[in-house]
Length: 131
Image (cartoon, rainbow, N blue to C red):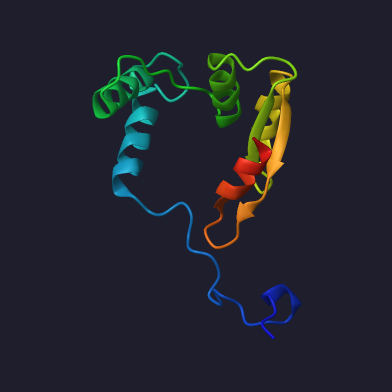
């Protein structure tokens, strides 16, 4: 019988998880430059605007808006879709807990659907049933 490592089985990664964040000299250079310029603590220092421009170009879209967090991005997306109080929103039952906060913020009802255990994605059959 294959038991999880927590219950005495063989660990998948006996050496532990990979180092995070990975060492990246380009990221270090950008962080050091922002520190030296004194821009790291300013909201309108040009970095966000440049990122928005790069994302517009990369995705070939007219509008890009950065969000302060993923939670706000979920809420913004739901509001843009005109999700109203009482509307149902389908999401995976194994998901980041913060995603429920966006649904709660627009007073919608979360409908949890199982994931496909082989792919760790939302079960297509589960979505069909929920709809």
